[in-house]
Image 1 (cartoon, rainbow, N blue to C red):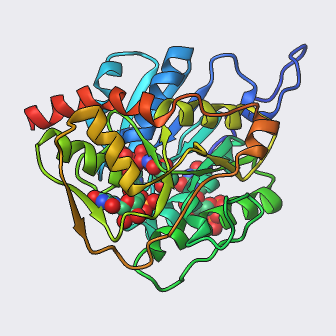
Image 2: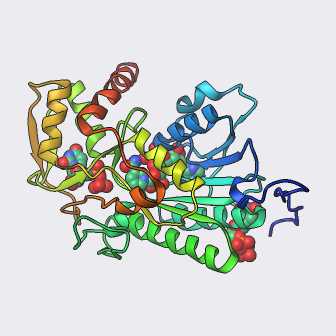
Image 3: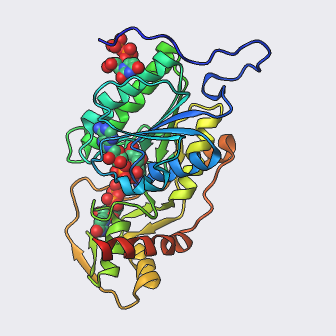
Amino acid sequence: DLPPLPRMHMETGGGEQKLPVGLRRQQRRIVVTGGAGFVGSHLVDKLMARGDSVIVIDNFFTGRRENLAHHFGSPRFELIRHDVVDPILLEVDQIYHLACPASPYKTNVMGTLNMLGLAKRIGARFLLTSTSEVYGDPLEHPQKETYWGNVNPIGERSCYDEGKRTAETLAMDYHRGADVEVRIARIFNTYGPRMCIDDGRVVSNFVAQAIRKQPLTVYGDGKQTRSFQYVSDLVDGLISLMEGDHIGPFNLGNPGEFTMLELAQVVKETIDPSASIEFKPNTADDPHKRKPDITKAKALLNWEPKVSLREGLPLMVSDFRQRLLNG
Ligand code: NAD
Ligand code: UDP
Ligand code: UDP
């Protein structure tokens, strides 16, 4: 059990304006779990640039210290090596909860529970990075937030899909039962610099393969679709969601939809027009298509992505070249 601790959270003083709990301070104290990862490190850059105090919690499962090295030494920055499956005591205003490994059921459930428990104790605002995978292999296209999804609970991908679905349930439960201010983002496929090179996602695979002069591996017939969002658009969306008045869930993704063959073509044009394509068997339960309906985020968050795939892909190439050469 946790030792009893004083409730450190800022209560509004005398003449101070009444603001929602998550927004009371000028210079906010913000936790980013998974902040050493791909999306998290870009989010941390933006929060640091804005003048916030940032605490990153990461166990370096897939994240890297180098993603944050430029903040070491800043008095506003702290990096804690910690697994969110274990409880932790901190005093902050906002929690961006991104931590999530590859086989993530336990982290999604216990990690999210701990971060919600933390948010409840200190009155912080809590943002969950959920995923488009909660829609499973969708029977509705494009997907609106009102769609409940088509997920196989015992399939190979289910520890991720069901883990995030449970995390959403926990967040809403803490909101309804304990008044925690929660925000839920459903993130669609995102790419950009600092993406893991070898975790098997299609954009990182194709880009690394093209740079290494290897064939691009297209799974199945390559006609399945995804919608690819550049990481800076996602970070803008996450911050708008955290700062705004709406709980969500909100789809955060780029509605531009591509087949894997079309993606391979864009990668070829961007990196190496002579690159070849190699077809490989697809994985089980692979969603056939996925494209966000972002009407809700446009209307309520005043957000929409700005960077197209053709503009965004070149922006990750030099980062990948550098890391492939050095590693
Ligand atoms: P990532 O793997 O680069 O980052 C995840 C970070 O969490 C890593 O730094 C990792 O070390 C850390 N982590 C994992 N397990 C942990 C644990 N138990 N305790 C502490 N830290 C832990 O992944 P990303 O692409 O940056 O994704 C960030 C979030 O966005 C995740 O929640 C992911 O599910 C969600 N998301 C991402 C995408 C995408 O396309 N990138 C799409 C949908 C949802
Ligand atoms: N927790 C945490 N940090 C805190 C407060 C709670 O890590 O500052 C963890 C706590 O250990 C528990 C979880 O969050 O595992 C849920 O906490 P809550 O108080 O909601 O549930 P309870 O402990 O009462 O079951
Ligand atoms: N894919 C592919 N070649 C690869 C890696 C993935 O054709 O080298 C396909 C995969 O079958 C899926 C799509 O690309 O249809 C997106 O896969 P990813 O793992 O990037 O994202 P998710 O399936 O989680 O949306």
